[in-house]
Length: 393
Ligand SMILES: *Cc1c(COP(=O)(O)O)cnc(C)c1O
Image 1 (cartoon, rainbow, N blue to C red):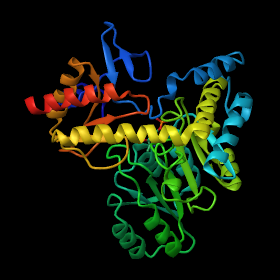
Image 2 (cartoon, rainbow, N blue to C red):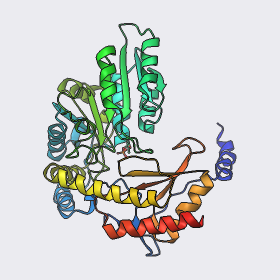
Image 3 (tube, rainbow, N blue to C red):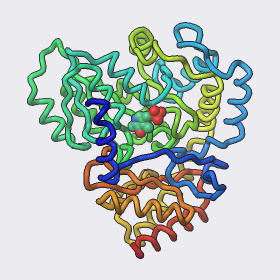
Image 4 (tube, rainbow, N blue to C red):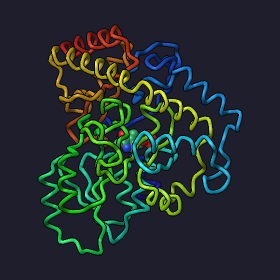
């Protein structure tokens, strides 16, 4: 596209009601925010599933590590690695039950960095149609052949696997979200593992919305299906530090062999300045809390999720059914979703309208998320406001 055409393109986006802009808030607690006019909102749009962003010890851990510099000053392989980052990696590997783990600067960069390093022209990647954008982009830059299968549809995946006639010299990958970010449903891991036994592929699961959220103690997708990290059959478990772990960054947990290869070959790992020690220290403290209190935190999260889902369902809202704290209310037209979220905003409820290209055309929605930090009153008040708006609109 010519730069001279940008103005028209932007106008087109605006005409389609898809123009986005950034709005600033200040988070006063895990569930309360204020805008620039000091108007207060209850937040139902964050991925702060365990509410640990404002936990005293998580903040204190970051503050203490600030003493070792506000920035990391270089990439991990030059001057940027810190005790905090390496400790975090050990802790992540321990929690995920893998030999090793590698931290990247964001979850987005993790998917890019893993797929770019491991897949190439002699690879075929099978990717769920609702996978996160970072997986899609990682597939694209890898140069591999990419085949998209219907969402969580293992019959469709097997049809593609069986039909292709892939040469023995090619590596096959299957990559999927663990918990899908826009629909909140969970990957059919047992069926994927059956296919893996038959077709022998490298299985990558992105647990960005699963860590701290599913599994009895919040270990993620493997634990949800009663499997432990070591023997679960997932070759690479990807995740983020920016959701339940209340910080910033991403990780790939896998064998020592694969992690060492990534340290040597993954361009987002090699060519970007490392996270500062304070971020790693906060993430590590959040992980320690998850290790210690995971069971009760996940129970609280599930309690809040059930409460909100039941209240909204009873009021007749068109929810995508499920069990995770990602609660999509599918409204169809973009305008409807925008109107709904702006009315909520007027009533002091912050939630996000999700529209194309984040979701398919005609499935614009409200994406409401609950956290373990919400009080029962906050949830009941929110459900009441939303139900009244739903009746009115
Ligand atoms: C949020 C998300 C990411 C990106 O993680 P960031 O740390 O925010 O960059 C990757 N994968 C999935 C499935 C996600 O939901």
